[in-house]
Amino acid sequence: MSALHLTIKTLVLASGKALGALAAILLTVVLTRALTVEQYATHKQALLIFAMASPLLMLGLPKALYYFLPGEPRRARAALVENLGLLTLLGVLFAVALPLGLVDLAAERFANPRLAAAARWVAPYGLAMFPMAALGACLVARDRVGELVRFNLASRALLVVTAAGAALIWGTAQATVAAHAAWAGVMVLPALWMMARAVRPTPAGSIIELDVVGDDSEAIGDDSGVIESGSDAIGDDSDAISAPSLPERPTLAGMSRQLRFAVPLGLASLLGTLSAQLDKLIVSAMCSTEDFAIYATGAIELPLIGVVTGAMSAVVLPELTRFHKAGTPARIVALWQGAMKTALLILAPVMFGVLLVAPELMTVLFSAAYTEAATPLRIYALLLPLRAAIYGSVLMATDNTRWVTASAAFGLTLNGVLSVVGVGLLGHAGAAWATVLTTYGVVAFMLQPMGRALGVRPSSLIPWRRIATVLAAAGLPALVVFGAARLLGGAVQLDTWPAALRLVALGGGYAVLAGLSYQLTGITTARQLIDFVRRR
Image (spheres, helix red, strand yellow):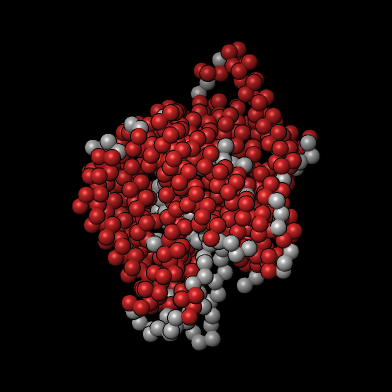
């Protein structure tokens, strides 16, 4: 397959993921307005149980299909059945564990008696979600990206309608979680049918090649995108490669083979997912139910981030690998820095825009009850400069994937310690600060092996002058708008304006000034920015 085909397919997946994230935000808008703060917190806590347990139990099995399905004309169906059999067995284990004590333990630990009733619906939800988690890897590995994107968009739309309808009619967390369970029970049937069709015997002489970077398992999940991956690296598996030929029917030996391959991947995914969800878990355990609802609503990243970084990773990673094999590390550094500089042009003004209008944004989207969610949203926005680069891409391209797992383990440990201390000192905002500090710490950790792999000093990997220039050009207009709002706010009674009007006035003013700042400093033009986003 050509590099262009690779890029187009991965960009399609990234765009589908962005639309899925927008659907999740739309559902959150409805739920925060239809449910009380306590009921919404209960809804989030119930789904958090699945978010924390699923990466531990799935063992990386969905990702194993990226290895066992491509180019497999003989055992593709058997490999899929083996994978689904293991996932279903683990789903049953999860569903059984919930009523036998896991639900009561979570309700007691979160100090939320409402959680027991709502969380019981997570059992049938998880039972359907475990086998459905294999859909993304199966369809991508069998070169059916278009089908996957269409399914994800349709399923997300159905989830929004189902869960929003339950919230509007019954107004309880039990109803919304039950709606998630009903949605999963319905969608698992076409998902299984699509997977079965994808592994139909291949005609003689036809080979399907793996042509993708990363996976799209995140596109199927609940409203918060709970199935996440900590690492896109697919390591080698010498045992699987050298294993004797297996019969075309599913076998226990085939299941064992997949488990040996999947467990290391599952460890990296587990560490990444736990690190991403740890702050919410600690806030839920150490703070009130209302504080958790506020925090969980604001501690998010905007969908634009996934589009920019996902597209950048798709384009850059194959080239980095090619340069590594050609023995030209200087070209790797140049390409990686160039991608970072381009992405920062978008992410820097987004960061300052969020810092400027976060209260208005939260009020317009989720109602005045969630205005305080602006605090974690603003803190999370400080991560955006780091999102200008995909640090693991250099480690993957240079065959140093063990450092991806090591960095995930380091991040999980650091995040846990800082979150407990931060929440104890600052309340729920402390968890957001812990996440930001941990992420910066993990990047500093990863720069060390990156520098060794490329033969340069770690500090030289970052284009400091360019970053400072872009941040200054994007930050100065934000200071101007903020100062003008403070000086003129009393004269025009800005605080009495509707939140939507303040959002338009402050956000629009900043956008105009930021565009002029970019143009005057010669960083870029508005047309170049629009073309950059449009291409992605």
